[in-house]
Image (cartoon, rainbow, N blue to C red; front, side, top):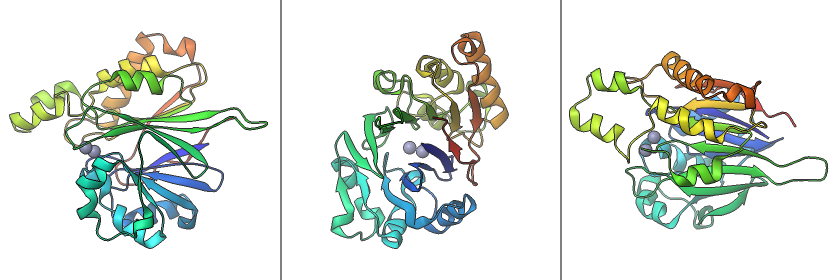
Length: 269
Ligand SMILES: [Zn+2]
Ligand SMILES: [Zn+2]
């Protein structure tokens, strides 16, 4: 399996997951045009994208969904509640491309499992995208968790032992506290329905990493209340303090760029 981020942060999020030449998108919060440009930078043909899964209706996750669905003629997968919340902002999409899903379904040959996160949208979900065991190949899975104010029981349940992760390290507690955001916004971000703090994420992640875990991408960093350097050093420090390197010595942790794609990460078999 492979995965990467195509854009990350409050200016727009999109994640690509796939295997060989079949892929799905998780969210498209940048314009359709920017998404196609970023895909071409990775040498991925847009005709190989088989669907878009939407995690929640905030604009940084759906900005380009409608345009892309119409252009590529691909299905959009979302729960009934999310269709109600975001439907009007997507513009017209052919009925047979609007797919209502519940907790799991298949797209691009991969199983997509949705689990709820804790966020101030109508509904919001994290994902586990898995390749079932096949003849010579074992199973693999990518865990995705962004836009959550806290680490939830469902995250522990579904993300433990994933091979790759895209997880939110939104803000640094100290920077948010001392920063210029108004008090109500600080409260929203750090509240139970806001976003994950670097240390908070690191402690959760330490429980999900297993010996098979290869790669972690830190995503959805705040431009104002975090920096790639702070996020990475905080997460690495905590993983070290919790002896994660003993369990998983070769794990690589990287930060998703804001406007450009991360390199395509191909998991080893
Ligand atoms: Zn959100
Ligand atoms: Zn977001």
